[in-house]
Image 1 (spheres, rainbow, N blue to C red):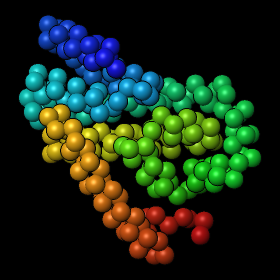
Image 2: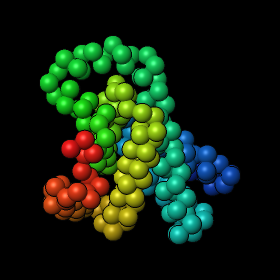
Image 3: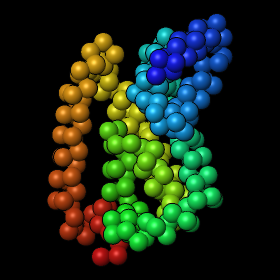
Length: 210
């Protein structure tokens, strides 16, 4: 990771001398993170936020950092999705269908009720690359995949930007524990809400097959 941090500093200097490169790296860095799972998304988003806030001001810079980070991350995940789907998906899908939990996952993803998948993809503490590999093995429609991935990327990056700012993670890394507590508290409240709406006819979370 030291190499990656050194690379970010080199890119920072390059952008300071050539501001027009900022949007390009704003997309390329999260794209690389989506392709190489070992690169932390938190670091990439923080870097983009720092660069764009300095160059364009707090409000405009934050909006640009969020938009370009979402775009780059989505494009990277979509590329991996397409590569796996056209190469090894059919082979591994046969193995997944033979597994009890694999079949459950396929039924959830390929079903009409997508909130469970969106909840999993929107969890910043789960390995999104692994979930993306799993999605690539399913027969999920491209339009559904784009919706799920774009929405989850936006949720995660907004979470990292705004809660990261609130808890000042760059100066106080241990505050990530408080951030996790807030996240899981919000997740718990959402699950309780979903359970309360489960049997209502007008619930948007009710499976249309029921």
